[in-house]
Every structure is written in structure tokens, then in C-alpha cells.
Length: 193
Image 1 (cartoon, rainbow, N blue to C red):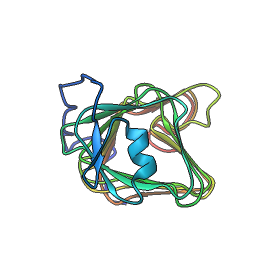
Image 2 (image 1 turned 180 degrees about the horizontal axis):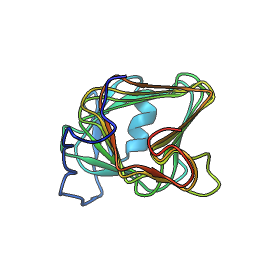
Image 3 (image 1 turned 90 degrees about the vertical axis):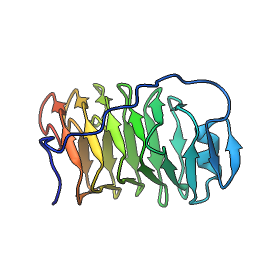
């Protein structure tokens, strides 16, 4: 696989502006949304263009058939306020030119869901807590797919157990480019388990 697990490419820095104001945070096809979750549920395989830093609430579940791309324009941050789950066939999240501050949480992909990090997408500061299946950035389980493309980054993630960045079980991880750096696991697989 192409890619860099040692971090010599020099990742872009996180945006300095980390305020999270209320109001319009994004649009889909010209329609404004005050909530990223609301935009995700209405995106219908469209692109969500961020207009401000925003959050995803703890316990957010993105159901089967929900497909979307989040474009941060290279300047906005999504902060997770708890673990976020993509579950079921056809649930597919794609990220480009956006930083996702996992904020000591992670993504859980279940039952054939998919996630793709495209150019400029950064997942950082994730943590898989004790009792989880591991994967500081994401646990990828049961027929799911996770793809990292050129120009994407996963950094500063850790796991109490296995898979500092990713825990992959009965699933597919593809890295055609990108960088995984500064990820640690308590038991095995700093980058991938």
C-alpha cells in the first residue's frame, strides 16, 4: 500500500480558530442547516459544505443508506462530543479538506458501513476506551470498509487495547496514500490491528 506511517510528509496543522458558535454551520445544495446531523440525514449522497466549526453529539448513529461527503474547505473543524456510529449497508461517510477532532472519542463502523478520507481530511486526537473493540480513530468491523487516500492524515490517536489508529476485524482497510502518525495502542498495533 502507498502511504506513510511515519509522518515524514509534514501534515497540515489544525485550524487555529476553534470556536463553535450557534447558527448556520453548513449547507447541502444551497439549503442551510444549523446542525451537521440534520444535514447528514438530508444529504442524499450530496456534499455538505461547512460554513463554521461544528460538532457531532455523543451517541450519534448514522443509519443504513445514509451517504454523504463533508467538505470543510480546508478551514473548518468537526469536533466529536462522544463516539459516533455508522451502521448498516449503504451508510457511507466521505471527508475532504476538513479536520475531525475526535476529542478522545472514535468512529465505530458496523454492518457493512464505509468511510473514506480524501485529500485534506484529518482525523486526530481519538481514543478507544476500555471496553471498546479498540481503534483510536475508528473500529472497522463486520464487512465494513475504511479507505485512506493521498493527502489524508490520521494522527495522535490511541487505544486502551488494540489498534492505536484502527481496529479492523472481518472488514477491509485500504490505504492508497496518506499518513498515520503518533498513534499508540495499549496492547498491540499502534497504527493498525
